[in-house]
Amino acid sequence: MSDTVNATDERKMTSMFERYLTVWVGLCIIGGILLGKIAPGLARTLDGMAISVKGAPVVSIPIAVCLFFMMYPIMVKIDFASVVQAGKSGKPVMLTLFLNWCIKPFTMYAICVFFLGVVLKSLIGADAVDLVKMPFGLDLPVGAQHGAGTVVLQDGIKMLSVPLWRSYLAGCILLGIAPCTAMVLVWGYLSRGNDGLTLVMVAINSLTMLVLYGVLGGFLLGVGRLPVPWQALLLSISIYVALPLVAGYFSRRWILQAKGETWFKEKFLHVLTPVTITALLATLVLLFSFKGEVILGNPLTILWIAIPLTIQTLLIFGLGYVLAKVLKLSYENAAPAALIGASNHFEVAIATAVMLFGLSSGAALATVVGVLIEVPLMLALVGVCNRTSGWFRQG
Image (cartoon, rainbow, N blue to C red; front, side, top):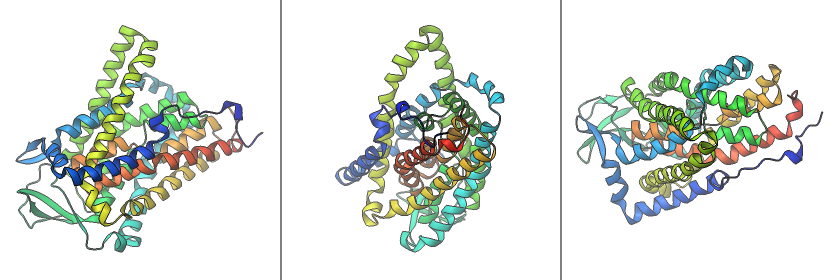
């Protein structure tokens, strides 16, 4: 049995956006910082266009629109009817669910607390603080304590002043509870995994997120002394997961009935691709227009956040790959099962961080660092899979 896959079956990314995602994010960092310098009020004005509750901005309308168009194309691609096939898949589906919901959130929390709160705390700034949104529905007087934060008045709006490293921790937590449902289709394809199984796992994780994302997010944020009311997480999941999921499900059914599967795949999905890219890049530019001063003041900020995220990714992949071997899965099932756990659903994490903590928060910045390291790390792990396919039985 060969230790490598057949070279003649080489698969490559065809989308320039997917191939150069890290480059695009890097350009957004530069563009956002320049925008913040040239037009410092633009991003703040756009973020100020919000739905407010009791005078406090809750949902930024421009960001909500951008993030909907980031999520909808992912959801419309999924055939949720394929979930019924999960019973035939057995072990790989259970392995993925176990990694994503029983292991990954807690290892992310532990690793990030250790590095951000201990090892790198002095480099981040032991006394550095971040201003984040007041939790949805909470009305405390100025000077009151809430978790690790203190209520302060900023430009006439009540905000929470929290330790900067804890704000980064919050973003990492939101990444850790968001299993990938988009790019993992690419990673599974490149590793020559079972494409049908990957789609089933994507559908199952999307549905599971509706229940467990808020539960685990609320619990871990509370443990991290950044408590968020359950209403806030419920609102976030409703807007950024449930709404595009429902829209994707029904529009997919209607289009397939009216136009057929060929038109849907060859025409409709291709039209959506540039919309998705534009929405993601616009959101990133806005975010970095706020965080430019922080990055310029401490250019190694991104590196400090990237260290625990990288270790987490490698740990979860290694654990998933070893367990797949122990469970005697075929290579075609082992590769996507391990990769889906290692990869993160950064679209949902960004959306939730922006809603809960604000576009200018350290939490939002941490979720974007997840985007920055996603492609190079996952491509390296795809390479590991391809080179070690002979460790598993085939077919």
